[in-house]
Amino acid sequence: MEFLYEYGLFLAKVVTFVLAIVIIIGVAAASAMKQKHKKGELEITDLSEQIEDTQRDINHQLLSKEALKAEEKSAKEDEKAKAKAAKKSGEREEDSKARMFVLDFKGSIDAKEVASLREEVSAVLAVAKPEDEVFVRLESGGGMVHGYGLASSQLDRIRQKAIPLTVSVDKVAASGGYMMACVANQIISAPFAILGSIGVIAQLPNFNKILKKNDIEFEQLTAGEFKRTLTMFGENTDKGREKFIEELEETHQLFKDFVTEHRPSLNISEVATGEHWFGTKALSLGLVDAIQTSDDYIFEAAKDKKVVAIKYVTKKGLAEKFGKAASLSFDAVVNKVWQSNRQFPS
View (cartoon, rainbow, N blue to C red):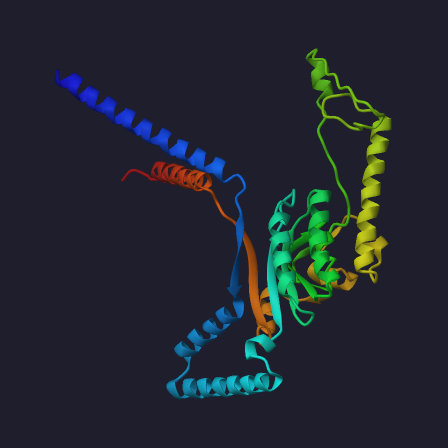
């Protein structure tokens, strides 16, 4: 009887646990259905204020009381002078300052990040003035032509409104990444950043011989001679290869024309070979305009401009939050087990 009692208690616990999981999943799924058309929101960070706070904290730690008082007195005098000048012009000091809007783009193969970029660009263009500046911290090794074509067009919207656009490359802007960068009025690069790769590549495996070896037939029906040029499972023809290469060359020419349009001083035949270069060499080739990190550029700009970072963040639904939490919990358990297995017995 005691065994049956304990077994029944154990079974009740299991059933309760399973029901709880089912209810949570059901609620999450229902929430996901309701939030199919979820919206995002803009996050605005005052980078000028962050820089000032950092400088103030360091001064408090390093300067003597006398030096700190002198520093604060000098800062107050500067603020009064700026406020006086702004008053004469009939504007508040903050309103009279030019602004720099900082955007971040870290691109994937399909450039899906363009969805957020278009929202950020639209928000900036709604308030930006000709004396302002847009600064894009770009990092991408390239990817799909249509995705990066759209991303480049988003940056071109800024140029079309006559707002100065600067692109900074701290790590890499190659292929589609450079297609985006070349739109800017100015490109700056870290010394060892990778730039260029103005070329087009396509590759795919072909399993036709394996299928034939195993007596597996593959049929592909098309309407139109070149509806499909190369295929993964069918037998590719020389005619199909020639057409495919023709399409690659056409895309490459469009790429070269785009770069030439935005950076006419470039020797396009020299740089459109598909090669990539480090920042210092890219400077000598004309791919970039200056060697400088994004941090240095922002720090210098903050002396005269109001610098703010704009980021469009998509709101996560309950299902996504639950999934992420479950994933993190699972990873934590796996890591804990892995770490315990690595311990040597004492």
